[in-house]
Amino acid sequence: MKKLKSRVWLEIDLGRLRANFAIIRRRIKSVSVLSVLKANAYGLGALPIAKALSDAGTCGFGVAEINEALALKPLGKPVQILGAILPEEIEAAVANDIIIPVCDFRTAQLVGECAMRLRKRARCHFLVDTGMGRLGICIEDAGKTIAEAARIPGIAFDGIYSHFPNAYQPRCPYTLAQIAKFKKLLRGLAGKGIEFKTVHIANSDAVNNYPETFRPPFNMVRTGINLHGNFDPEGQRAMRLGSIIRLKTRLAAARRLPAGACIGYGCTYRLPQETLVGTISAGYADGLPLALSNRGYVLIRGLPCHVLGRVSMDYTTVSLAQVPDACIGDEVTCLGGDGKHEITVDQWARLKGTHAYDIICSFGSRVERKYIEQSPDDNA
View (cartoon, rainbow, N blue to C red):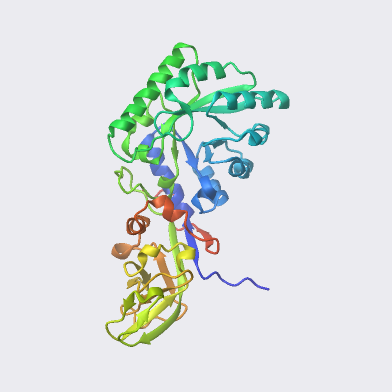
């Protein structure tokens, strides 16, 4: 049977993606960019995104765990696990030349033993906890632990990195202290003859707010959300990036309802007058935040149509007062658009009381991902 068109789809502009990558590269100049594609590129589709970024010149890909890493290996670029590795995952990582995070001495021992057994040289980066409090060798113990681990045979420790919790805050004393601690550690290790090919600490927020994180001794940055054209809502925006996504659906119904009619679960909206009401084929299962209920709007024929009542799992009701000639099957833009009525990821994040990552990762499995080439690669 012929597959029917999806009711809800996400347009992902690979041209705009490459344009964003070029803007980031211009800001950091000669420093390399590691493109972070965790969680299937935050739900957008890791392989198409990775291929576009490979063409754009990324030095490699950062992921959260081994299965994500193995999926990207065929592209021929270095793939680095940025979080942690479990003991049972080490052999697959070593065998496939995945860059392994070393967060403790025992992990280094296990990696070395596996590498010797496989007669390979494992590639590793030390992860140092300078204040994130999540993973890594505690900064107080890092000098001693790294010096001991560096002597383990079978491993090429060609990198070292750390991570920020507050880099969205410009000139944050906590972040500045992390940078200072990390630099002090590097100087101490250099004094022992231990140096690294790759040194990185900058995430997307730091690329915007902390230029010192892409100057020596740092020679690589990690970026994920900026590639999508989004930022942390609290941080400054040093780059003019464009969103790569548009979430669309279709109008499923158009009805004229009388004054006093209640709309949706909980009857949270009552029509003050006779109104032309539409129902669109998308709900919170597709990624529409419940916070849009009685507050947000969608675009039909380029005009805002306000959400009436509570967003349901599969459908959302909107006012068609702005578009009285709307027809069933009309295209509806839930996220995206142009001009003054554009609906942005940041707007949804503010309504929901969250951040852009949460919005981007929330698009449901039935939402079709469509890859387009709408924006020119040289767009700044």
